[in-house]
Amino acid sequence: VSRFEAITMAPPDPILGVSEAFKADNDEKKLNLGVGAYRTEELQPYVLDVVKKAENLMLERGENKEYLPIEGLAAFNKVTAELLFGADSPVISEQRVATVQGLSGTGSLRLAAVLIERYFPGAKVLISSPTWGNHKNIFNDARVPWSEYRYYDPKTVGLDFEGMIEDIKAAPEGSFILLHGCAHNPTGIDPTPEQWEKIADVIQEKNHIPFFDVAYQGFASGSLDQDAASVRLFAARGMEIFVAQSYSKNLGLYSERIGAINVVCSSTDTAARVKSQLKRIARPMYSNPPIHGARIVANVVGDPALFDEWKAEMEMMAGRIKRVRQKLYDSLTSKDKSGKDWSFILKQIGMFSFTGLNKNQSDNMTNKWHVYMTKDGRISLAGLNLAKCEYLADAIIDSYH
Ligand code: PLP
Image 1 (cartoon, rainbow, N blue to C red):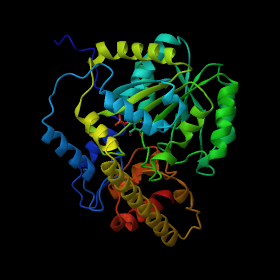
Image 2 (tube, rainbow, N blue to C red):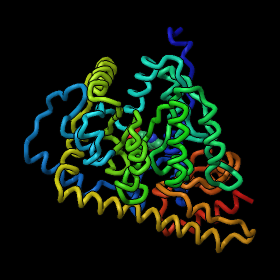
Image 3 (cartoon, protein in one colour):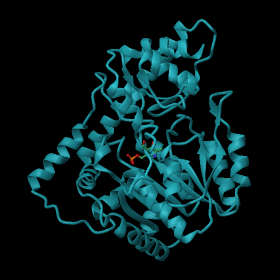
Image 4 (cartoon, helix red, strand yellow):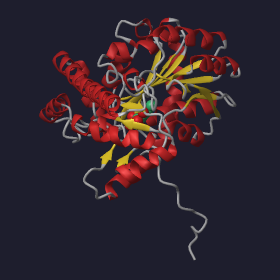
């Protein structure tokens, strides 16, 4: 008998498990709208041209594979903070940001979670209901207590702004409030600029600490600056803030695991201390981060020509998703005879659409129509093309009614 009898089978991951089920389906009509990864109009994975150019540069230079420092590549850490806050931001010139390269968004969130557990014992993290599924896992594994604030209103398929504000107000003073910087996952519903101001007001009133997860900068609207507006609004108020960044989507560097954790502090001295502790957390976990993705980002952002090319490619990707969104809406509106208002689809932004389909209806999408999606009713529009919008609309209408 095995010593490992007590180890039971873990359930499949709700997001990555969808891809596994998709692979096992042999139907020609099958469609994978589960995982959030950009696909071309031919539904193929896409490597950005700027990434290939940066990689060629790196090869030509014959760069070595020595260890990076614990905090990551200096050139990367510099540009990633500038991209986020704006190069002319006082938080940069006053050296008030502790930036540490992380293992993409997930690894950066985890570093912050450990810092919270260590230095804010008992403090709660408030996460939106619903949120990206991995947030709960990250805080659970770091033993950080969390609870939810209202976010999604099923009646309007929109933002429950009143509920959100009430719940942030009701949280114990000094809680961490996890916010999606742009393109909220899974709903695709973001607060308006006026609503962001009010959110900042209550967070300040209650001495909470805002904790931004920025996984889609530039990918949501097509503009890096516009997508960072929420974070910059909080930074401009002089608040102390956590921000986790990811280059998985906007540079298509999914498997390179490149991102960062930035902690905006009230002084240079505090930032230095925070950074030293983040490094101390990283060292026994993975020692130091991988170099390849960091060099790509540093090369792309640091070179004006490549930087412009990146922006153009991001606009192209965001544009394709917007066209698919429009076509899906048009198909639903022309095919559905029930009079249902589908305009919520056009109001959502980013790579996802929250359809409002419940678990049973989502099961029907998969079992009858071979459309793979998460059970919360989220579909990734990045995995859809114009040619398949009509088919998807039929599947959604059939599942709804
Ligand atoms: N945060 C959100 C809201 C996401 O949607 C994702 C990816 O789907 C991530 C973080 C992190 O992804 P990664 O670890 O690949 O950067």
